[in-house]
Image (spheres, rainbow, N blue to C red):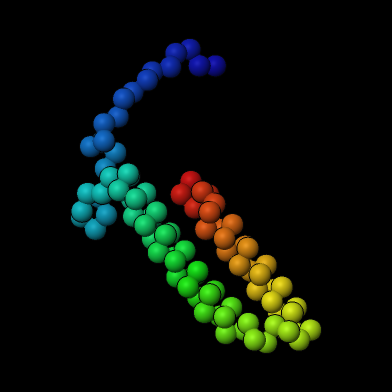
Length: 89
C-alpha cells in the first residue's frame, strides 16, 4: 500500500542522454527518428510508383490482375505502417 506520492520535476538537462560522448536530449532523438521516418516514407512511395508504373501495361491479363491486387495490399500495409505512431512509443 502506498502511503504518499512524491512528485519530482525533472529539467531537460537531467533528461539528456550521452550517445557516443555527445549529449542528446530525448526530444532531439524523437525529432531524428521522425525525420528518418519521413525519408523512409518518401523512398517507399517513389519505389512503389516506379514499380507500379512499370507493371501498368501488363495489368490487363488475369495473372497480372492478381499481382496488381497483391501489390495494392502491400502498399496499403506500408501506408498503415508509416502512419502508425507505434514506432515512437
